[in-house]
Image (tube, rainbow, N blue to C red; front, top):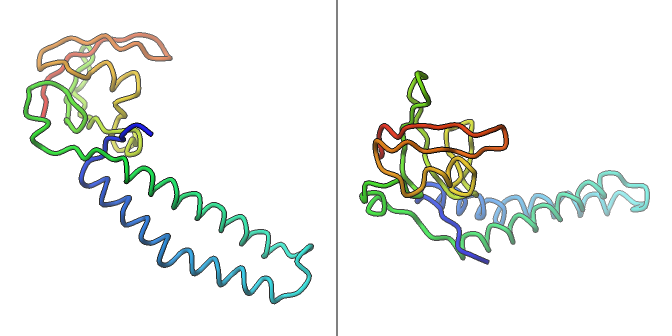
Length: 154
C-alpha cells in the first residue's frame, strides 16, 4: 500500500479511534454477541445478526486503521515552508470577484470538505499542488473548469 499523508492531528485522531475500537468497542460487541447467543435460537435472533454485523465492521475498521497508520507519512510544519502548496498547507484562494476562501490540503484519509480540508488527490487539491502565492490555477473539476488565484499559503 502506498503511503498516506496525514497531519500530526489526523494521525493522533486515528490512533485514538484505533485504541477505542481495540479496547472498548471490541469488548462491547463481544458482550452483545455473547448475550444474543444465550438468548436461544440463533437462526431467528435479530440481535445476534446485528452483533455479528457490527463485529465484522469493527474488525474491518481496525484492520483498515492499522494499515493506514503503518503506512502513514506524517506532514510536519517544516514541509510547508517552501513557499509552494504542499500537503499540509493552508491555502487561501480567490475565484474572480468572490470572497477569499481558505482550505487545508490533506491526504484522502483526512479529507472533509465541510471543514475546508481538501484531499491532495481531488481535482482541486491536485491542481493547487506546487503552485506559489499569486499564481492563477485552472482547476478541471467534474462540474467544469474554473480558475482561482492563490492569495496566501501557510
